Figure 1 (tube, rainbow, N blue to C red):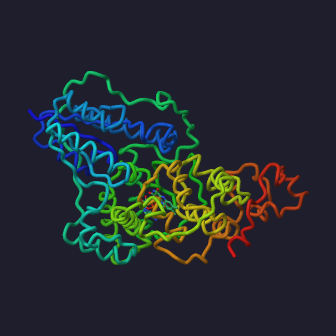
Figure 2 (figure 1 turned 90 degrees about the vertical axis):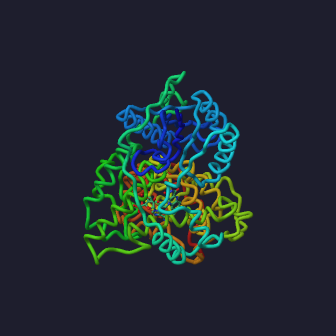
Figure 3 (figure 1 turned 180 degrees about the vertical axis):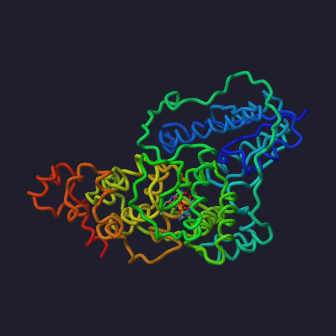
Amino acid sequence: MVAVVYWFRKALRLHDNPALIAAAEGASSLYPVYCLDPKTCSRARGAWTNPNRMRFLLESLADLDASLRKLNSRLIVLHGDPVEALPAACKEWSASRLAYELDYEQYSLRRDKAVRSQAEQAGLEVVTRVGHTLVDPEALLLLSRGAPVTSYDKFRGLLAQELKARPVTTLPPPASLPPPGRTAAPHAIPSLEELGLEPMGDAAVIARGGEGAALRAMEAHLRRRDWIASFEKPKTSPTEMLAGGPFDAGAGRSTTVLSPYLTFGCLSSRLLYERVAAVYAEAAPRHSQPPVSLHGQLLWREFYVCCMHATPNYRRMAGNPICRQISWGEDAALVAAWREGRTGYPWIDAAMTQLRREGWIHHLARHAVACFLTRGDLWQSWETGAAVFEEYLLDADEAINFGNWMWLSCSCFFYQYFRCYSPVAFPQKYDKQGAYVRHWLPQLARLPAKYIYEPWKAPIAVQKEAGCIIGVDYPKPIVDHQAAAA
Ligand SMILES: Cc1cc2nc3c(=O)[nH]c(=O)nc-3n(C[C@H](O)[C@H](O)[C@H](O)COP(=O)(O)OP(=O)(O)OC[C@H]3O[C@@H](n4cnc5c(N)ncnc54)[C@H](O)[C@@H]3O)c2cc1C
C-alpha cells in the first residue's frame, strides 16, 4: 500500500502536470492537497490581502476540485503553515511519498527546504518535477556556469541549446487517479468571506480563475491564427478597455491576458508554446519572431525565471550583483500619491486605478507607471514599486515583476535612462480622445480632449463647465514632468 500526498501550489491544473503524474505512479491512494498558508493569505504579509487575487485563487481551486471529482478524487484544503500542516497530514494519512512541482521564488525555496527536510526525517520519499517553465532553470544555470544571464540574445542561444537537447513536450491530463483515503476533517474550499475578505464585484473581474477558463481563453486566441502569427509587442495598445468584457472570449484583446493563468499555473507555458508553434508551422515561413512574437513573450518569461534563479538577493538592490546601486529618494507621500492614483497626471492615475481595481494593466502601461515612479519623474526606488505591483497584480510573479522593475528603472538589462515615457504625449499615440482616462477617472469624463492628459492647463471656465476643478476635484500635478525628466 503506497499512500501519497500531492501538494498543489502553482500548477493548479491537471494537464501537463509532470509532478502529479509522478506522484500517482504506483500509488494505492493519492491525497491532492492545497495548503492555505497564512504567510501568503493573511493581512499581515500584504501579498494575499488582495481580494481580487484571492478570488482568482479560490475559483482556480474550485475548478481543480471539480476536475478531480470527475476522476473520483477531490481537493483537500489544509490551513496553516505548510511546514507544520503538511507533515501532520502525511502522518495522519500514513503517507510514504510527498510530491510537488518545483518553485524557485524566494519564499517558496525556504518553505520547501523546511518541508522536504521534515518529510525526509519522517522517512518519506520526496518526489519533485519542473513544470512551471519550458526548461529546467537548473539546466540553464549549468550552461551559463552558474552566472546570471542578463542579455536576452545570449539567453536565447543557451535556451536553444537546451531545447535541442530536451525539446518541449507536454503531458495529457491523467485518465485516472488513485482515490484519496478517508480524512478526519471536511477540508472544503473556503469562501472569500470566510477568509475575512470583501468581494470586489464583477466590474473588477478581468479573468476568472481555473484551468477550464484558462484553456477556453487559450483556444479562443488560437482560433485567431493570423493574429497569433503576426503578434508583435510592443505594437499593441495600452489603453484598450477590458472591464466587464467577455473574459473567456479572447477575441479583440490586443495581448492575450493569459498572464494570471500562467502565474497560477492554470495554463502550462509548455502547452501554450507548443500550440503557438503549431500555428507558426501552418503560417510558415511568415510569422513574427522573438523578441516581439508570442513565442518571444514566453521566452521573456523564461529569461527572468532563469535570471532570478542565478541571482542572489534578486528582489533587492543591496547585495544584488546584477543591479546598479542608485541613491533613490525616500518620499512616502510621493509613493502614496502614485500608488493611489493621485499624481495629477491622468494617464498615470488611470493606469494605477485599473491596476488596483482589476489587478492587470497592459505591458506598456506597466512601463509608463514604473518609469514615472523611478527614473522618469519621482525618483523613488524600484523595490517600492515592485512591492506595490506584487500586492495588486493578479499575475504577480517574483521573477518577472522584480526583473521588469530593474529593467524599467535602468538598474539592470537596459540602460538608456534618457528614454523616458511622457505621461502626456505617450498615451496620445493610442487614445487621442482619452476614453481610457474617462473610464477610470470619471471626474475627468467631461473635460475636452485637448486637456484630458493635462487638465491643469484647462482655463477655469472650461474646468467649471466640465464639473472638475483642478486642485479640488482632481489633484494638481505632484511634479513638473518636463523639469523632472530633463
Ligand atoms: C514593471 C513591470 C512589471 C511586470 N510584472 C509582471 C508580473 O508580475 N507577472 C507577469 O506575468 N508579467 C509581468 N510583467 C510583464 C508583462 O507586462 C505581462 O506579462 C503582460 O503584460 C501580461 O499580459 P498578457 O498575458 O496579455 O501578455 P502577452 O503579451 O499576451 O504575453 C504572453 C505571456 O508572455 C509572458 N510575458 C509577456 N511579456 C513579458 C515580459 N515583458 N516579461 C516576462 N514575461 C512576459 C507572460 O507570461 C504573458 O502572459 C511586468 C512588466 C513590467 C513592465
